[in-house]
Length: 324
Image (cartoon, rainbow, N blue to C red; front, side, top):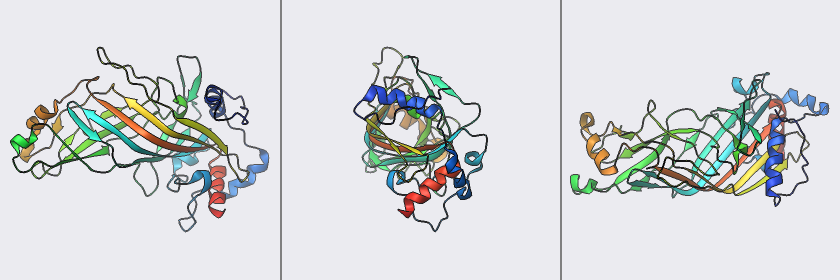
């Protein structure tokens, strides 16, 4: 586990130094003894309190009071909010555009087992467990209209098909400092909900028991041959220490592009009366589809995450940001 304290004076323009320095920082954060009094503020900011501001803007649903977050055995805790403003999702022969924002928000912790991953260049990074947010969905995605080739031939006059990406399980293996490395930033299990006048209310591609497991990276993917790899973009990464004297660190990643083309897609289920339209949808969408025949690109992604060694100090930092 890396415990070296980095030089915070490094500028965001010094990308390689900033990236590797950030991993060392995420190995261990030192909390000055003078901040011990912040423990009096442990727990979630009261509902009546103002939403956190400054570098913590948008983190008001972070589950700071969840048992997994307040466990004294944790070495680090944090909060994340991420918004993707563009991109697309390709399943077999069907494209689902991301033309409205997709939002992810959750808390995370690094426990006493101190899990780490090692990258090809020999550097390491912490890997965190994810905790769902309070009073909010972990992922929210808009419904979009899509074109499924051939559907109009089977459903004359009823050609509009809408799709919505939904969470199909817990986000896992959150590795924020995989930035620029050929390693997933997280694992995201999803399912695609299809809507049409004849599909019924429970028409899906994927399910909770058989999800599409996305492993988006800002580095380069490794799909099976002959599929060509995709390469993402870490965007601009910056680091901000808490402006009110707390020990929390906020990392921002702006205009990033996360990609994946290594996942498989199962067939449709629950479509039409007693599943009568499942095979039609599979045929028109070319499903099931093996790895390499599907892809996702989360473009124009802006993410902020706050990190602290103490949940009480992080809570106090957010409360102070709201007061200011």
